[in-house]
Length: 358
Image 1 (cartoon, rainbow, N blue to C red):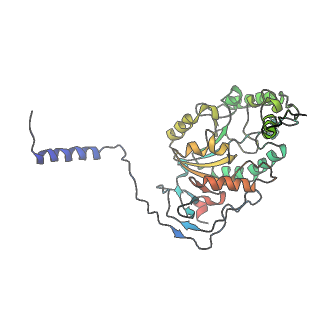
Image 2: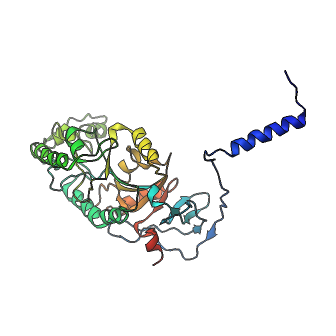
Image 3: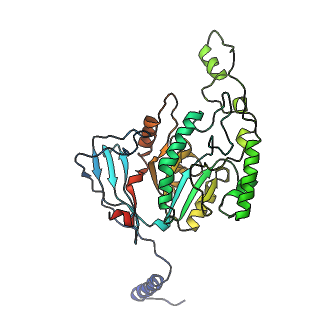
């Protein structure tokens, strides 16, 4: 076996390093981020554009930080913020994204009480925001805020996507594009007819509230809530089969042929694989409900933020609001809590290149 001197061995190593360095394969790079926080004097309230739906966020200390996401050739500018207990305030920073590497996702735009046929069961059934009146309020939020926001990015973003409960049933398979199938116009028309027939054919009638309860002398409160809970969405009030219906995307958004529907029961991995395979690195997340599905379902931020740069579009979301006629404070609380470990933006802070120069 030949022996090499230290010098000759070092030369061999240098040759090997040079050969590796000349490879066409991309080399992973990092950058040093200067976490320099500059106090913002007289900061403006956050998420204050739509006070009917969102109670503005007011905090004493705001800081400006350097840009976090800086893409080469960026054409989508997203200012965002997060809250830090350790910094003792809100940290704001600009971000510069490539729109072609950004997906716009709306979580759970349920087509409930919107004229498509899937209706809240009477007299005591519950779905989505749990009353017909609150579902109509959420629908108006969708029409006035979410739909224009999504449509403003549609021609530039990599994808517009909607997530729905359940599996890809035969009806929605015909109606919507999925990870693996894009229906023809004929399929869509057939799917629409089947959807109408299916939803209109269901009996939206459940049972009444209990007329009497059996309470023990020792623990009547426990017995009371066991027999009359605050939220019961089972067949008792919704009728058997209600949750097996093919829930459509709400009629309050525009669904284009290229828009992709995500099905919760398929799980997160297919969504992750699809986005990565198509070069998506960033996600603008909208939808419902901020305190529930928006964070914990398949396309919720708890999943997506493990693999993508996620920006929660705070005023394009609503939280559930029991005991209130307005979602203002509920969505404020949900977004404020999420901001501890998520970046939050708002509709007016998301600007395409041509808009940013106005």
